[in-house]
Image (cartoon, rainbow, N blue to C red; front, side, top):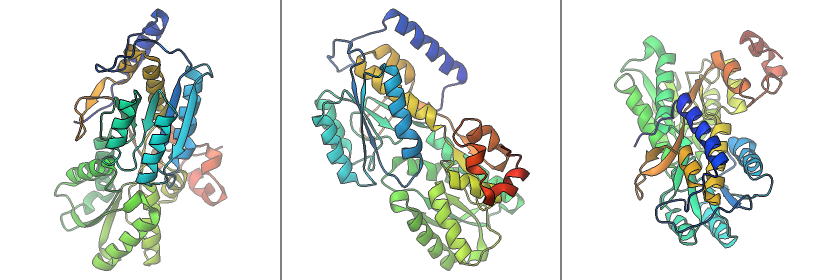
Length: 374
């Protein structure tokens, strides 16, 4: 089921509701209809956070520190956050999840390496009385809720941007390459299909590859194969599912002698990608406001751990179906196409990066042209 972000008015209404509930106590027994949890635990709660990998810069730079800060703030410093990263190892993540169960966490945020294989561990956690919230990727199994970005919108945004970049060159004879995310990540499938739907019959997908672990080196190798098969001069554009892989794709094209790079998409608004966009190596990225996603997930985890069901539910007013579970409470966050034109009004304005971080000497001229000044 497609989950779209609620409007700003709805978000504001939810915030007002939360304030009102807090003032009144707002405590109901249990986090879901099957729970017998009777009491509010106060601020002495233990939250677990399992992240999938470190290849993507966002996890260490944004997600973990924001969740940690939010948990501390909401619990007046009395709550505990336990954190582990699986380094793209699904078996390791299962062991980490068991460690969280053994540690007796009250609620667990899990960004699954493999959304399907984690289902058994999710059930173990639920059987142990732990609330499980799927974070960023929709894990299978009896999760209490899902917090993530509007994944259909991500793929649509990427596809639309690539067509816009091609302009009049977007014809049936135009050959594009699709470098997609890992098959073990359910988000990757949604990105790919949504982008394909956006392309329609406007272009020809000459080559498509799903990249193990979302690794830039794997993406570079896949791009080299595409270049050999299609010919560098015959590639009109490249759909890259994220920024890390876009970097590998660009390396492959440059190694093949391409100086006038075709438009290349991305996702995550990584610093290196923002700089590539400034100089024209990469056409766009998808800016996903990580602070909003991470803070929302942390608040949901704290509230459900405390037994504050009404406040928890007010934060997740949409619903999503997974292959194993229907009508999962969902908090869906929207996204923005990041191009050279709106760097200042997105990642700089939101404090993701400072102008100083972006505009190193190598990029000073491009920054000046784009109106980025210290």
